[in-house]
Length: 330
Picture 1 (tube, helix red, strand yellow):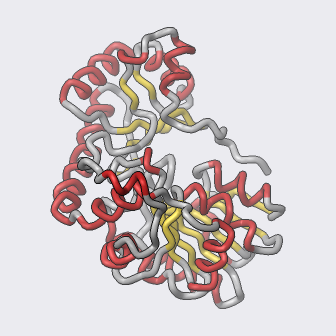
Picture 2: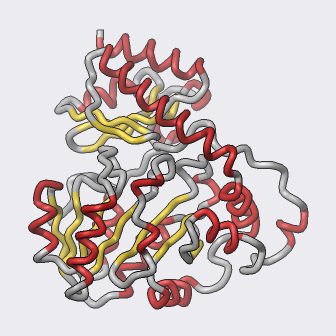
């Protein structure tokens, strides 16, 4: 079975500018779900550029502190783990709660696994028949957020028969209480985290995997040395340690998400779900709306069945989006 979503990623602003013949500087990009007002990166010392990355540079300690003492493996974005993890296992029956980030299907199917797309409502039954259950929490693209209790129950039931629960938590940092990463040292649970979304640092390509030591060691061996660049490690260490910025940013993002939901509803586009970094608008007119927004230099993310719309940043971006929204929905 093939996934219903295509593999074109958000953020392809240059391609959109070319397709719709609108100069790049006029666009508002709401397609990525990345914090538009991300962590303020300071100037990097010159030696960071001259030296090879070193494992004892402080990132491991910063990661332990941020992730509650859980060992994690840093890698070049959680995408690196998505691509390599399926290669660590012999062919299995894999269930993916869908809709979901389509790279998961591509990676597991491409590695020879039997992959099934599963509705949330069928998850309980799927736990009894699949060997691997995979989900994004919050979901990408819908923003649906499941509490830890059912996920930990699914993990226990899968692990009891040698199965595996994989949870992609790329968008969870504003709601850390929902994370199951604290249990990831136990067999049968793998958790993916990203530095790109909440911190707005997608360009440095840094993410993390939490799992039992044997899986982390296998991943590290497959990836080889220097999987994360020295500058990325330097930035990641300091971003993770910036508790004050994090504690201010999380509520601000959640408030912005509610503001976006209210704005969309005012103009006839109800958003029943979303997370701190985007809203989901289920609609059969997704393609028509995507095109109408793009013709006015606003880039959204189209999925089968709806639109994912990220947060504007500065007030002038909110004003532009509201004006375009009013024009499109008039």
